[in-house]
Every structure is written in C-alpha cells, then in structure tokens.
Figure 1 (tube, rainbow, N blue to C red):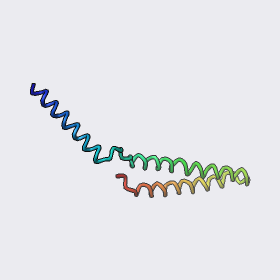
Figure 2: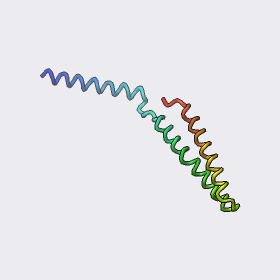
Figure 3: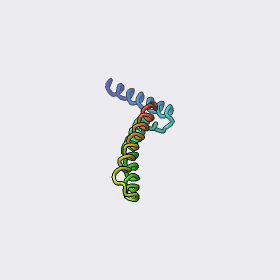
Figure 4: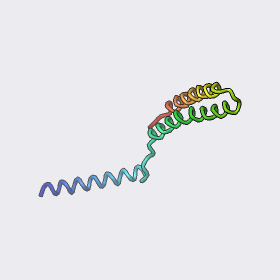
Length: 94
C-alpha cells in the first residue's frame, strides 16, 4: 500500500516536472547547434576541396595545362576549407 502511494506521488511529480519543462522551453525542442556545427565542418572539409578540384580539372582540360591548375586550386581549396573550419570552431556551441 505504501509503495502505491509512493509511485502515485512520483508519477505526479514527474508529470508536473514535464509540464513545467514544456512551458519553459515553449514546447519546441532546441536545435542541436553542436550537431549543426559538425555538419558544417564536414561540408566544408569535403565540399570546398572537391569543388576546387572539379573547377581545376575543367580548366586543365580546357587550357591543356594538366595537372597544374588542378593541383593549385586543390591546395587553395584545402587552405580555404581549413580557414573556414577554424572560423566555425570559434563559434560557441551552446
């Protein structure tokens, strides 16, 4: 009998805490900013060098300078990606 009263009391406290938390948050779950930053870092790390390499490859084919423009733009793409990643890492994740 005492266990039933304790369980009922605990259930009521949990329900009250959930209601209070839902009112505090506004019913909307906060966006996971750390996850968003990780996705941005991954996109920068893959996208910028790949895009630069693609542009370099096209220019090499068009100008007949293979592989020099490709290599130059690939190096510039990696430098730009790391610069952007450093900038993203300075933001607060909260």
